[in-house]
Length: 117
Image 1 (cartoon, rainbow, N blue to C red):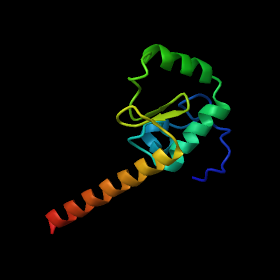
Image 2: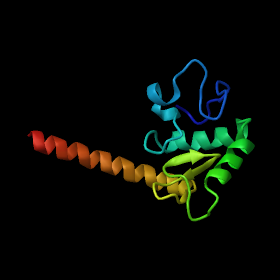
Image 3: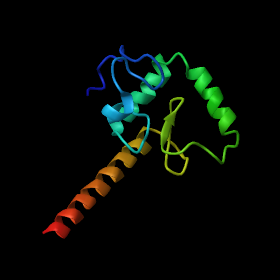
């Protein structure tokens, strides 16, 4: 999916029209445990540029996580990406997370191949 593609089919902060966002299309999820850096950056862009609920989403995030030491984990919420430990990730942090995830998947594939062989 190209990042240049228009996002006209988005109807809310987490749903696409005529599609099941998370189950059938993990690349459209705001969950950092699925997808890749391209989909995460797209999700952030949709939040900031097209979501009519952004202000309400930011308010809910602040209400549910009022203390700066505690943040959501492994998710994009109100346009901000949060790591597994709740650290806010910029685009460089998302790229590092994606590279780490690919490395883990590659090592897991090699281990299963070695165990089977």
